[in-house]
Image (cartoon, rainbow, N blue to C red; front, side, top):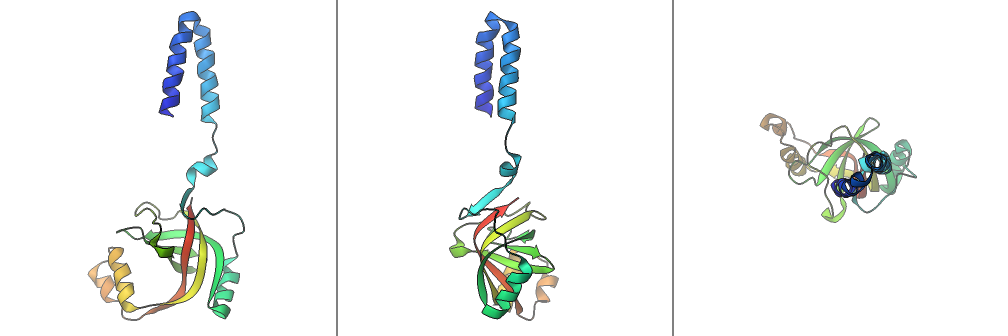
Length: 171
């Protein structure tokens, strides 16, 4: 945008020497052309594989399939609760009433470590039943910078649905 502004200033200087009305017309033209952008795309941030916002599965159906099959390739959406504060290598996402731990395939990409809370997210990948060990839960709690008191409360593994994402869109 800065480059466009500088180009317009050069044109303005040239045209303003000839006719001051041209300066206003050219400025209005540049402003109208370059201020029109697609805000939908400018607010979305893509991580990992390039995925679309289409064909998002109903989470209730995904949850039933995971219970029957153990895992399912799918695309779901939810709201980010938190992300890993060390690397951005995982995030907790609220989908309906469930909290899903989302990790990223082969650690091939990361999401921002801060400022993602309450943002909408679309994830493509594999939803599966998961048992997260006490040790891993403690590791995630340390990544999330939880207090010692909260970490000491972790005494049992967590049985839940987790998600291994190959692509993510954060809006």
